[in-house]
Image (tube, rainbow, N blue to C red; front, side):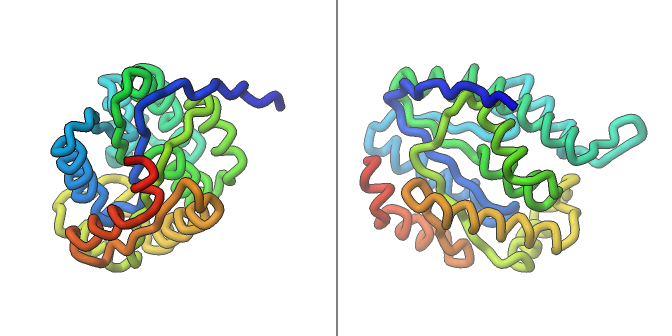
Length: 219
């Protein structure tokens, strides 16, 4: 199979991604990062996956909605929907902002597909990595922040949010596979990734991020 040609990342902005299972506090940490950057007059934009464009947001609704007749989503279809949303998102939001010198803060990116569809759904890391490369045209984050939390703790936090989506209701074994996959990815990519203990209070998590060398290297 011929691999997709990697496009040089001609970007002057910083690309920061937060990964982790649902309930680990990604949105809370993103709020703190966004506030801190704006306080330092660093231009930034916040986005998410799946989503970030009107088309990708519609795909998000399809993916996360509970299954109903005619809308059943198997593992391969799920993965391809994510990648379609990602391709549109990268082309229309992420790359233009980076090229303009804007720091992009993204809730989830390619590691989520490897963890959820590659590991938990059993499609395989290599398959997902190839599709990720096609969708992103080789774009990689400058920093990936992985929030780690015990599976049962994350489940308890999700229960406080109210209505659960299609992925939330997967069994604990599914979410444990996701957690292990994120930790494996972080360990395999130490120059790009940092892992933070999401069981700590949000202020402590943020303080630990600011103290890490990868963060200081970017700002």
